[in-house]
Length: 142
Picture (cartoon, rainbow, N blue to C red):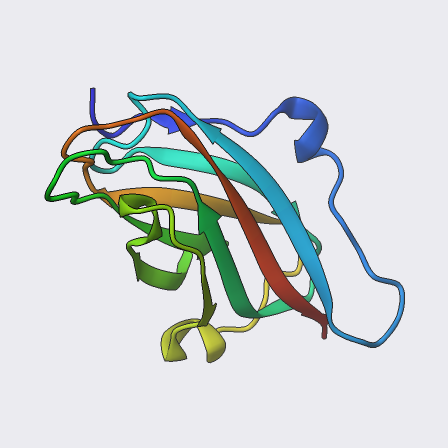
């Protein structure tokens, strides 16, 4: 059924990567998808990043999760309920991409409590296949 949410594990909800220094750093989430988790509006909760952390770029590295001749699956990455990157088509063919965040997201102040990171299937897979994805966020403490 479309519109389902896969929740982040309780242990991951209590911890989040944090860089004590001043430099930029990558936060990685390894995601596993079943054939039913790429329907329209399905949400995969990836995990959390820390409070007062800004995201400047998103790496999306999925396997091919749509085996149709005319694949259709499209994803977006959201942090703290704001779309960071939209229109990710890499799961159509297993292609990775490095993306700057949207201008709206860049203009939004980071949350002051741990921030939930999610991946949403905005367009369903034509012929869904199970797969994995690496989601990396380029972060900076504010």
